[in-house]
Image: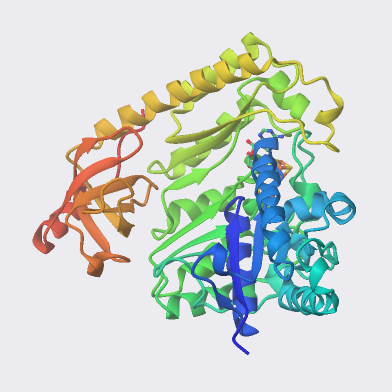
Length: 476
Ligand code: SAH
Ligand code: SF4
Ligand code: F3S
C-alpha cells in the first residue's frame, strides 16, 4: 500500500510554525509523505492560533470547507492542532463531527501515533458502512489528545525537515507564566518549561552541521529562559554556549519581556558579535494606567530605563515592539502617550493589534468599551507613525553596505533576491542566482522602499571595504 499523504498548514506565530516542522518530522519518521497539494492529501492538518478572534475566524472558515470535502471523502482525516485545539476541544468534540483529531500543543510528542490511530479508525468505519450511506455519513470527532505533557520539545528533531537551507528556529522554552490580562497564550500553552541547555546545544549543533548558519531561539518570554530549571542557567549563558558553534554566524531570540532584560543579558548582547542586532521587546502601551490594567509588571519609565541601559552597552541594537490599541478603558490621552513613546524610542518595527477579547481571560470580564472605529483609527495612526520612522531609518541607510543573508527570490519580483541584515531589515537586490541563496553577501543600499531596502550586490573586493561601514548609525 502506498504511503499516506499529509498536508499541514500553520495559522499561528513562529512557535506554531516550528511546531508544524516538528510534527512533520514525526510523521515522516513514520513513513507519511508530504502531499503536493491539500487536495491530494488523505490527512489534512491545521495548526491553529487563538491569540485574536481574527486568527480563530480563519480556522473556523477553513473547517467549514473541510466539512464539505469530507461529505464526498469520508475516509479523509481532518486534524485540528495547536492552540485552538487546546482551547476549543470540548466544542470540537461535541459539535464538529467532521474533525477526526484534536491535538493540543502539549501532545505533539506523540502526534504520529495519534494521526495513525485516527486514520485506521476512519478506514475501518468507512469499510463497515453500507455503500448507499457511504457518501452521507460524516465520521470523526474521535481522537482527542491534549494535556499529555509531551510537547514538540520531546521530539528528537529531524534536522532535514526545515523550510530554509541556512535558517532555523529552535524552541528553548514552552508556555508562559505571565499574568497579562488580555492574553490566551498561558491557557493554550500552559506553564513555562525550559529545555535543558545540553539538549538545545545538541540540537543546534546538528542543525549547524547540516548547513544552518542563522538560528532564532523561540519562547513566549524567551529571556526568562531557565528560571524554572533552578540551576541558575540563563538566556545569557545559553547564548554564550551557542556562540561557540563555529558554523553559526547569526543568533537571534524572540520574544523578550521587559522585566527580564537583565544586566547579564545586556552584557552578553554587547559582547557577542554573532548576535543579530535587534531586540523584540514588546511594550504594548505607552500609558502607565493601561500597562497597570494589563498587569504587564512595569511602567513606561522602567521600560525606557532598561532600553537606555541596553543602548548604552550595545548602541548598534534596534528595537522592535508589539502594541495593543483599544484595550478596555484606553482613552485618547492614553493613546497619545503610546504615540509619544513610539516617537521617543524610534522602534525599527512595530506590530500593532486591535484589542480582541479572549473568553476566559481576565480582560474578557471587562466591557470591550473602545468602539471598533476608534480601534481602527488608532491602529492606523500608530502604523503611520511607525512607517514614517522606519522610512527615515531606511533613508539614513542609503549608501551604507549591509551584510545580507540571502533568503530567496523577492516576492514582488522573481528576478530579484531578498534577504535580511543583522538588524532584521529586508533588502532586495537585482540578479537572481540560486547559488547565492543561503549565503551572506555585501549589498550597498541605494534606495528606501518603505518596508524594505533596495541595493546592489558588491564584488569580493568591495565586500572587504564594506565591512567598515557595516554598522548602522540611524538611532538618534
Ligand atoms: N509572548 C509574546 C507574544 C505574545 S502574542 C509577548 O509577550 O510579547 C503576540 C502579541 O499579540 C502580543 O505581544 C500582543 O501585542 C498581541 N496580543 C495578545 N493578546 C491579544 C489580544 N487579546 N488582543 C489583541 N492583541 C493581542
Ligand atoms: Fe501573553 Fe503576556 Fe505571556 Fe506574552 S508574556 S505570552 S503577552 S501572557
Ligand atoms: Fe497563537 Fe498559540 Fe502562538 S495562540 S500566537 S499560536 S502560542
